[in-house]
Length: 250
View 1 (cartoon, rainbow, N blue to C red):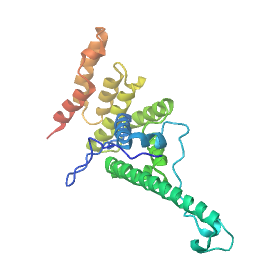
View 2 (cartoon, rainbow, N blue to C red):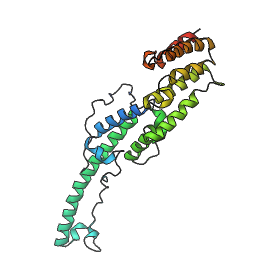
View 3 (cartoon, helix red, strand yellow):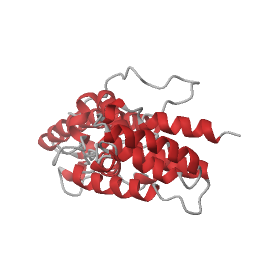
View 4 (tube, rainbow, N blue to C red):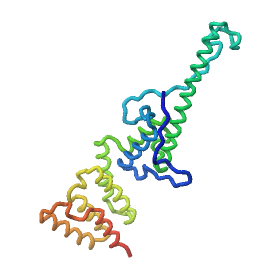
């Protein structure tokens, strides 16, 4: 039997704007989404878990028994012989039980599917929209937003390095792209942003927009490096970004 989903404590209230669990598309957001979907699904999660190599099959739609299945040439149940009629009645009762379980399963799947759609920002629907089953959708989301660590590190590292390029791009557009790439890289703790690297990369990149700010802040970072200070003693990159924004305001 496939059970109904449990009641989710974070369900969307009627009339309220949905709170998207997967909006920016970070691995952390995906983990949060998966947790809430698994909570919503309850024991149904066993059948749709995207982390399992194999899952139990869902119940198929039961087939309504017909009189001719029990006695050749008979289309009316009243024309069945006594023995065959008893078999037919048992089959009908079995069908009713299976139909009840199947309807419960389909209702549960529909509820979890609706919750998933409400929790994923529409910008990400393309990831799973053409997938036929709920589990296939969850697997597609997992592969896109939390692939195997080595693959993700490579992709995030490449995005971060690309985001450092400032040629022929407006500052606000560049800063938005850079910050998204940096936060992904920091979350994964890739070497490209470890230690002083994140500070130095940012300050070198913004020299294209504000050489004076870049030189001043770079001097402070280089002084800290020369004195052997731990990078954690410096303001985080986020603070540098905030200072830069403030500096560039007219």
